[in-house]
Length: 341
Ligand code: UDP
Ligand code: MG
Image (cartoon, rainbow, N blue to C red; front, top):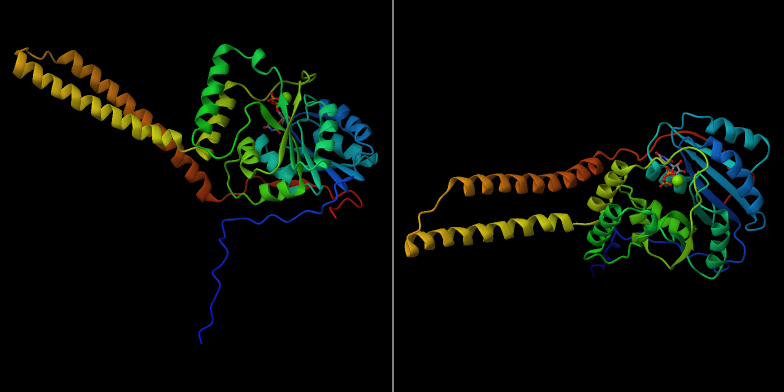
C-alpha cells in the first residue's frame, strides 16, 4: 500500500519556541543602545545604567551598537570594558541608520530579556525599571509611550502624523500604537520572532507591532537631549514614513486605482455633458482652457500615481538584492558567563 506522506508544514510560519514559565529574575538582561556620535552621552549613561540595573537581573549586558560614529564611542566603550563594566561593543562598518543598528543589536543580544533604548539619555532609566515588573507579570512586550507628544508638535506635523497612521492602519490586522517608539522591553521569544523576519525594509516600529505577543504600554516623558542634536529632521522622518508605508501597507496602491476610476468616470460624464450641451441646447463648446487644464491635471495625476508605484518598485528592488542589512566591523566577546540559559 502506498504510504501517506504528510504535507510539509507551511514554511512561511516561523515557529516561536515556548519559553520557560518562570519569570522571577531574568538570567541575563541585554540593553541594546544604538549610537551615532553619542560618546558624550554614553560616558554617563552606561555607568548610570550599570548602577541602576543592579539586582534587576542575574547578569546584565549593555550592548552599544556603534553605527559608524566619527567620535570616540568605540574608545569609550573599550575603556569601560577594561574597567570591568558589563558593556559590549558591536561596531558597524559604517553608518547604516538607527533601524539597521537596532536590528544588529537584536541579532547579537543574548539576554532572555532585551531592552532597546536610545543612547542620548532621552529615555529615562526609571521607565526601564518599571518595565521589568510587567515582564514578570507575563507581558512579552512592554513599550514606552510618550505622553504629551502632540503638545510639542506644530499643527502641520500633527496632521501629517495622523494621516500617516490612518493610512497605515487602514485595513490592517495589527495595531500600530501612534506614540510608541523604539524604547521597549522584549522577551527573548519576541526577539527570536523579530530575527526571523527577512525583509530589508526595517521599519522597526511596524515590525514590533507586526510580531504581536502580549503587550503593555507604559507612559513616559522623554528627557531633553543634553549633548548633541537629533538626527531626525523632517526629511529623514518623511523618508522613514515612506519606508514604513511601502513596507506595511498597500493602501497607496489601492488609492491609485481609486483615483484612476474616479478620473475616468468624471471624464466620461464630462464628455456626455458636452455632447448633450451641443446637441440638445446647441451651445458651442469652447475648448482651449478646459483642454489645457484637463491635460495638465491628468498629467499630474498620472505622474503622482507612477511615483507611488515607483516607491513600491524601489522596495522590491531593495528586497531582491538580498544585501545584508548591516556589516559588522567589530564585536566584543560576550561578558563572562553572559549566555542565555
Ligand atoms: N542613531 C543611530 N544611527 C543613526 C541615527 C541615530 O544609531 O543613523 C541613534 C542615536 O544615536 C540615538 C537614537 O538613534 O541613540 C535616536 O536618535 P536621535 O536622538 O537622533 O532621534 P530622536 O530622539 O530625535 O528621535
Ligand atoms: Mg533622541
